[in-house]
Image (cartoon, rainbow, N blue to C red; front, top):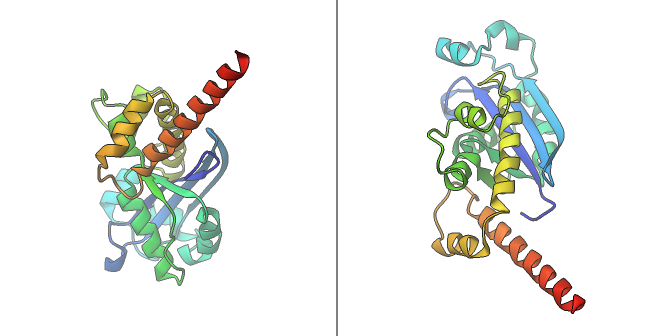
Length: 219
């Protein structure tokens, strides 16, 4: 994770929570962010080859008819795997999306992705502690991020990408002493989320050193 990292902000809709129990992806959205801006997007419905449970239909608005002619996960796995390789994986509840997607990759013959992964729920709780709710739709409403279709993977990925940009801007305003304290605490955060504060601290120190050198050079 560094200043030029590409962040793959991902959201998936699924038939349930466990691939091993036969649950499958029915929709995926991915938005790539680099240097504080969106650079690319990918989204697709996915045919799960099974009926979508009524509760999932009600939650997502995704019907069996909608996914019937969609590609299988096997069909998009190569494109998706290539897209995510060498990125930092981001999700709102990363401990669901990242393991589920890796299980889907392994199911169709790909190795699990060995990339860093960070969680926007946790970052929001730390960087925006005054919020009353950390559900994605509630956060976006508070931040005036336009969230048209909650529980639609492409829209959820897009607003999570916009949230990530807000969080990184907030991160860059923190004093070095605060970042140092976050790193010293060594909190156990989901996946590699703690590494965000190490990266921010390194960047803040470099900025301070550059500013000091410029000041000294002006004297």
